[in-house]
Image (cartoon, rainbow, N blue to C red; front, side, top):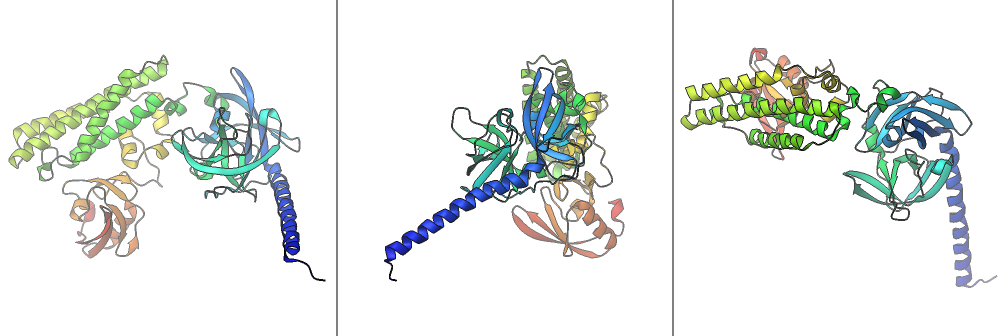
Length: 466
């Protein structure tokens, strides 16, 4: 039988339309069925009452992911699953307050966990939210990914999937039920303009940390959350930066560094230290702990800023005549005395506890942690290595005058790529190769000023003495 082309096309399009609709219906149902056993309604209590949020099992048995604002201030929390089981949530394992995400500790149950997908989804692709909007447990909704954009200082997924209070902390999922984001916020002055934190922010958290119990999470003045106060966090960063500035100036010889003069990094840190002191002076809060710690940090900043200024004058004095002078030496001694008065001051217990926490290692560079007095474990790269101060495990912040690193031809801001063709991931790798190649030639590949450069050098017979 002959059929007109338009009739055939209409039948084909109708068939395709039915197929697509069925596929969408099935996909939404599959996402719900696959994710449901892993999603929980979180009911929490606070000093002022309580509320509801959402979480989901991921990473490993006994851990769940949610939004930090669901946890902040909580004195207790319970997790309710779709099968009716209710378990205690014992506390927070790790958190990223800036991005509003957290890992929490739940009962090990052998339940299925959701798969985390770190890559960004395609704009326009389907997105599903499963949670407890307004306390309505285990509700699913769908929409699309609208855009990837900067929100509140961080990258977030914008999506149209309807959400409400109670969805916070729940999974935003792709069509295969993999989690692409953690639901955190919505625009109340718009329709379906919602935001989720990308999964790569979750993967940056440390699931091996000990659990912080709710009593400590709820305490406003707990030592482990001293960085919660932005004023203290900024002051800690400034203090560590100032200490690094002193170390850089000291590397230049303290009156003997006239060969290179004062580095621009030293001047930059000196200026930032002054700005940090001004910010501390502007603090007008009434929190007694914050006031106490800021006063202590202000003293330390003043002492180190004075030390950097004196060291700079020492180096400038020597540089002006091409050799060390009595004036340069006096400046140098005054710089040492000023730094000693800061470093000998006892550190408040609240700062001591926070600085030595595992969380601190994520916020500060190795050089900053060295200033803060952090004691690294066996697995940590040492903050000074082969006569260099480290910015990161294989990037140099500065080299000591006449030290081994300088003799090998290394300079500030060099990133070590390889040595004799062996990839270098940290300076400890380089030290091992140096030890094995005593009194032999070595080719070190570095990235310098955006380009790769080969350094042909010879290792001393006794590098440990350099």
